[in-house]
Length: 546
Ligand SMILES: Cc1cc2nc3c(=O)[nH]c(=O)nc-3n(C[C@H](O)[C@H](O)[C@H](O)COP(=O)(O)OP(=O)(O)OC[C@H]3O[C@@H](n4cnc5c(N)ncnc54)[C@H](O)[C@@H]3O)c2cc1C
Ligand code: FES
Image (cartoon, rainbow, N blue to C red):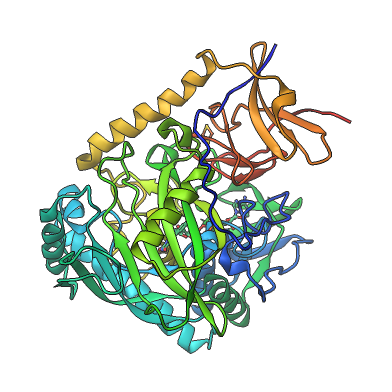
């Protein structure tokens, strides 16, 4: 008997007002890593296709991955006069960078007072300094290369979630000031509909931009500096000699793996970070109603997740009449939405309600999408030499600060490769040991192990014919777990539901129409094609109905 795991979440019967949300014709994840198109893909979308690799190459530096981390690294090294080649398996920006909300901030989402506990005041100072430097570097790079990407210097406002303790805002204010930031307490949150006297911390000199326009500008600047980009060129067989792509060889002295989560079966990194899914809506606001600024709350402290989901909001230019308010949040561990009884799609409804309460001037929702962030065990990204390797480097563990962490990745790896001193190398070293984060480590590891119990628990039973066209599910067939997708023409596509990385059972994500791994975050299209690692292969295809 074939069985389908039912999603226990209750569907809301109050649909959001939607003018249009776009789905990508994106079967191989080459445009973006989900089916909902983020607002950045509204026209005119820059051309992110740089041609496929079709010959063998000998280079000094190979960068793998065309997101903000890879492109920044490639650009920085090319500017130093090094010979650099970048390969990207989709188009530029097709990973999580294209799904970001692009706040450029030094207001770290894990709080400075926590960083002091996990490390010390000196590390907290270095973190503040490094993220501020990343914002300043982006601003300068935009200026130097005349990149038209709506870059703006803005204020950011951090305010308490109702579940958080009042004293925590004061703790954070003091910790940010010890870290050297010019923060101040405001008695009211600017432009936010909130009860009188709701105070906030103001972070000056933050930034925002249009991420795809920025990436396009950076890619073109990299090429102008002598670099080469190949898109639709997936790096395989990565080793200290280089890699292959499209069956051609790329020989290199240094290999930078900037694939968001490292894509080889290197055992260490996926035990130091955990994947979370986060949701975004973009709604119209009449121009002039709200200022360009960043707003964040401190997160739902009652949440079951180690990384407390918080709301993050900003404004972006849209057309002559409207801006769009981009509001994100409602996170959960990848593939585990239903353990909170709120399925992926209903998270947009919760986000819509929260956003309208705090920003009542918003109109229709134009876009909605979700994406994945890698949460490191101790709040800081992992940037530097891959543990155990001398000439392979990684940039991962970005958390919700991946714009600045990714940029720092480029700045730091450039300095390591060119032998320059850099005060941030040690703190971001992927081999660091984080003793003070041991409690979180145990909690997340228990969660990981629990994912294997899907092999054992009895499930509710459903026939494959209960899968509607355009939907998928996980089916039990005898002792096997199957990832089944029924296409719009009613054909069934059946793959193994066992993640090729380390064997966890995948979950169907009905919202982005992907199969997601709850263990380390590998994701696959509805037809079983790999979208992102740490796995390196597609799902095993078992059958397709005619
Ligand atoms: C919804 C959302 C909102 C966010 N908001 C913010 C924010 O406001 N501010 C902030 O600082 N951060 C934010 N983040 C985090 C930030 O966007 C990411 O951390 C960052 O974009 C990651 O960049 P990256 O270059 O490491 O990865 P990616 O952009 O994922 O790039 C990796 C690239 O590698 C490619 N690749 C993978 N495997 C291979 C291979 N074998 N060969 C070749 N190429 C390969 C992929 O196709 C991909 O394009 C957000 C993230 C999400 C999902
Ligand atoms: S990503 Fe590691 S088991 Fe799936």
